[in-house]
Length: 314
Image (cartoon, rainbow, N blue to C red; front, side, top):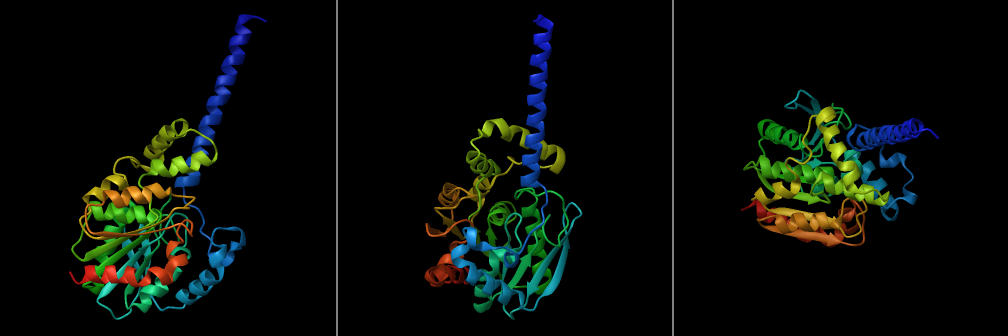
């Protein structure tokens, strides 16, 4: 076989591998960063999911929480997106802002907490994060821009309703968003924040996802960082939550499951250990991602609210 023919074959194989790599990594980037349609847990068969043990409670609480009266609120983001939220007036001087996770309807993540905080006499703001629900946006930015959105939501609530105290409750992506907000944009009205199974960095999220497919992180992550700059205009390593948490002076609650299959439990441990202020943790092994409060509500309720109330009165 002529040498030039061998060179052509080798070149074709290399080109094929390169094209496959570009296509695969762009597909992976899109599945993680690009907006997707959220589906209510009411429309999903939960029997074969980690939520199966709590499916009746989930259904009951979603239905009950969706019956609560609310007013629609809107803000404009720093980059021109119209963002949507629901405000539940409970005639209180304290308000909790719920910040949901990736590709989730807020009531999927927070129905149980909404019922619980309403029972404990809190006003509530339940937002649709950018690129979710009724909010505009194409790309999810993994707490980089979402933290800036929360800053505007906090200012909106203060301007419109003037609460004495604000609590931030974020889960998964929302947890990371809350941590970044607390580190970058602290506000005196925000007395305490809750990080429920939030990640310490986007790299950590990729590591868990790729490990399931037996793909080394170094083969994928650098090109996804590049795609982030090109398509979403973000620097995904610029200010990860694990760095933001070191700047947080306000008290925090950390919630995580040792059996979390989406965000490594060690992320929760690292965030807790690196928080320099007053804190409390609820780490369990009987739940999965976003379901610790759901699974252990009765056990943690008294200590959970006691900690929050202590901070609101300090």
